[in-house]
Image 1: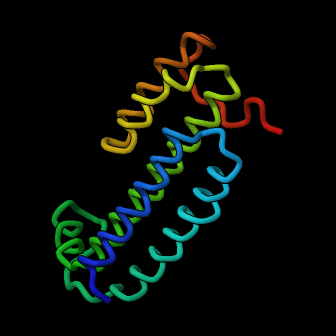
Image 2: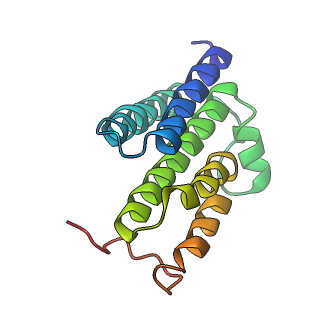
Length: 148
């Protein structure tokens, strides 16, 4: 397992998902490809990477910043962390796209939010919530809103 090659493959796969969200958000295969393909694929890879690196970094852990730094000195554990970011940022991007569609927010207004989520995760989510204030004046996220 070559972590550098897997890093490149995962980044390129995530990029495809983001391109679909930006340029083809209403295409019938966009959401299934992202949810069932990319995000679940990233989840499986995450499990594989964690399992193959677990316990192989002495002093690594989550109890302090120093332990996390030691943990991520292992390239496979670092790759697991990166895949974790890719999966969850893409999940947030999907949520933004779906919520905007339900709320009647113009897709063009969500594009900067999606791009920021792709590059800087929570920054894009915060921007989307600010954009969304124009449609529904509440800042809090209701994950059950308009649930089918």
